[in-house]
Image (tube, rainbow, N blue to C red; front, side, top):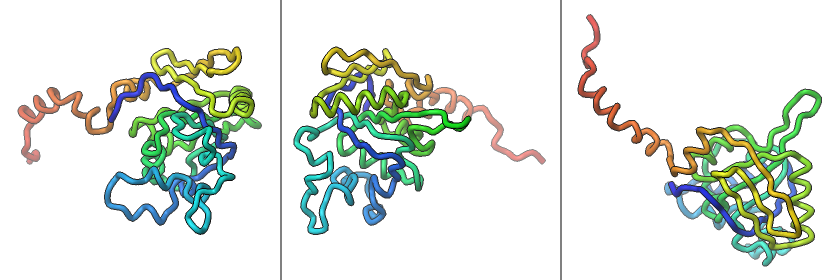
Length: 212
């Protein structure tokens, strides 16, 4: 997995809440036995018309957002089924960072991301950032005034810089374990192999016989 430290690129807006994994990568594309080729089908039902041509009304088909590396969206992104293919599609399209808002409502937390989706992102080198609703509203407003604007996400510093007007630098929180995983590019296998010496020592010393 490629380490993620600093990402600078166009920030694309997807102004929709409760985007589920079937909308991210529809079920007909889950039959592939490989982990490649999903990016071209990201948001398939929104990106393409019935005849297969790109829908000019969908934001990612706007020339200003071609090649975007950062996606900003609304609450509960990645809900629905637990398919890891959704994260593969996002990463293979070219997104390294997704930003979404969280808020408390009547004592309940409305998350930016569904839990399983967020965990799958961390395991596949995609950074998920939760900000306040007002901060995300501000980002959408800036993009509306400056389509195609760029942003820099600095994971070591945990900061987002929006390259438009005199925008403030936005700080964000992240679980230290996820931060380390992303900075070092550790998927589940490579993370396990960081303990290879201890595993080998254990295999050579532990009793393989079941107790009588």
